[in-house]
Image 1 (spheres, rainbow, N blue to C red):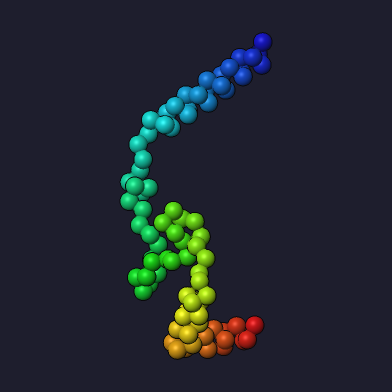
Image 2: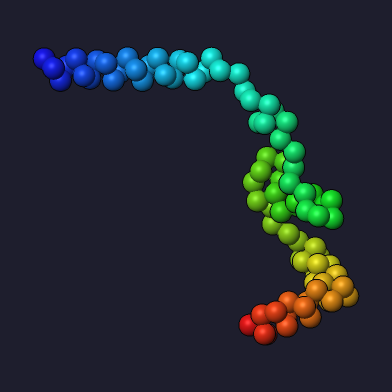
Length: 84
């Protein structure tokens, strides 16, 4: 009999908790979510609007390589990781 009361109380608490959670309005943090930006102000292109990862094309990867070579970023990383 005690077990039945405990099960009934847990079920009631679960239903009331779920109903209460559905009544709460969305917070402003979730409503005003901004896309992630790096220091340069460029949005993160590795994600689509839905948040799913996007694959880069070969042309985009090549352009990124050329840009890192010209800016000296590649040589700085080479020195930092000692060619590993």
